[in-house]
Image (cartoon, rainbow, N blue to C red; front, side):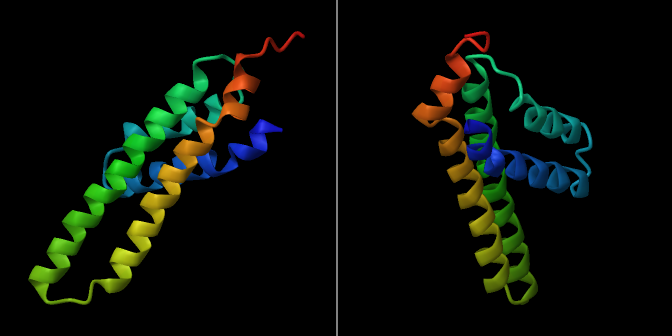
Length: 115
């Protein structure tokens, strides 16, 4: 079932919502939650929207990685663990984007649910 394949996408969007909430960007929290809920809507354009949103979220994680690493380096604090964690989150988010754009998922969304 493609919805199981989209579990990483749903989790990545919920983690992004938590990130935006902590960063004070509370308007993006319902957007991320809404995108996670969108995985249950069977329309042909949903995989493209999810893949784009997850690619943007992966970029946000990379941007955060660069900013926070620079701040840690300037402060003389250790930063290796921060780099490992944020890089892993960014890569997992980008992999979730690929799973949302996989051919099986796109075929399932494109098929008429009444068939």
